[in-house]
Length: 370
Image (cartoon, rainbow, N blue to C red; front, top):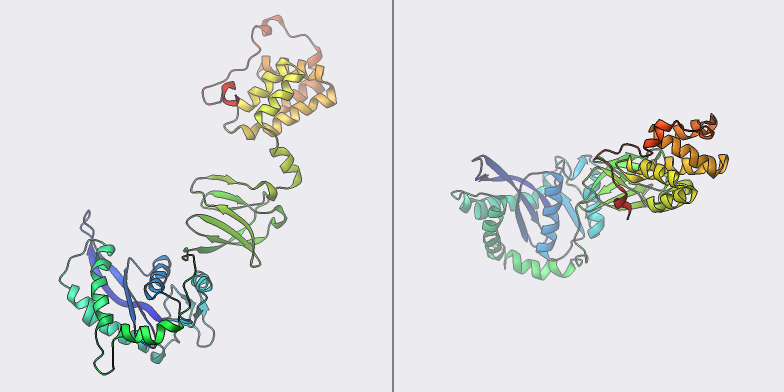
């Protein structure tokens, strides 16, 4: 199958702005029968070019053994006489359909003859009748192209028996491979470095990979719905794609110490704290409430509660009471109270009026954890 963006264009008008755009005409021609597929595309961008290939294969109802693209930038990143570089997304498409990519050689007209002749016929038989039409979208153009393309493939040859369609049914169709069960989903590929927190970044969202790959370079395969991570051609992680800033973390990707940390919940921390005493319970609740995301306070809460093992739960309860009075609820403050023995000194009577820290409207109340 020979194919290219033909260099032909069809104008269309944006109804809202009145601006005129030019749709690119994609052409694919089967080698033996000259059976032809034509499509208007928004541009020569890689997504448009790949999608046009997918629809061309669906149009002919099968997969040829090889594709011969013209050396345009979308498909061939570097033209070379013997060993051209194929765009990685185009190669991914080819692997999905089990089709060999054989780029037309630069400067070799014989490699492009089929599609060049096809372009000339399409210009005369399909595009010329549309020159006086006004279109308002690429979809409108394709709707007008469909019956003209059908007539073009049914039209009898002048010097040969039959038509493009009859020759296709006789010669090409019997040797086509079947289409795969799943349609190819367009994917982009990018390089990324695994950060020390075992996450990679893509469009302000962070996705985890197994922590063993920290500081390694990986390759991302990005579709509309998924983010896949590959290391040395082996897939090491797969995530649903998110379009919001934030983190997506799989538990199995974490080091063991981090896994233990995520077993904690606000309810579990509060239950432990209340067993030590009411002031410790209020202190831990206040620490969690002070963070926009509760999990951000878990490390500090665990640190405070573990001070009870070093200094005793009775002293921790007294330190929590003092911390609530003076509004010093950080781990460092609790540790300082215990180290200096301030928990063993009585609170001034004036400070006993309130043992609740000030909570503003941007933090969660206790009802959040019920």
